[in-house]
Image (cartoon, rainbow over all chains, first blue to last red; front, side, top):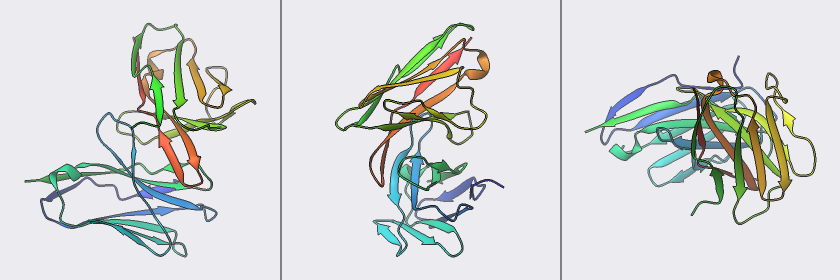
Length: 109
Length: 114
């Protein structure tokens, strides 16, 4: 079993749609959780950290459920520019991170 | 602006040559840096942890004699792919943590071995 597992995808949605990605992790000692965005042939860029209380940043909402070892990302009112691969990242400590395989999102006009 | 740089951004070399990739933290010191590799349509896989002033720690399955890591200063780590072969062609990315929950990635180096 992989340490971090994500929805297989790909997700193809129309502009304005709401889309949710899920991620589960196996290491219960994990302390830090993130969603990264990676555009084709570029480095990953931090989208948002994920906190136990849940957090929101504009159209993006992240949730963490430690008991179930589950993380989610919700994107509301999808834009064409949201098309990318979204990586779930789990870290037991600063820096040494385990990446999920990523979920590809394509937002169509 | 970028806080972690990598050089070169891409390199094409012949099989059997060695390639050095540099990773620099630009406005902070990093006692630890991380090297990842990403093959097409796959996620990033941690190769090794680069430790300033001491030996690097390699992940299982990564040959330490093949991928030489040197962390000579608090702002520079280098990865040398020795005797590169076509199967080493990949996207190599470094990262450096600036704080407990702040990790910055370099822009990556695309290596193509002919």
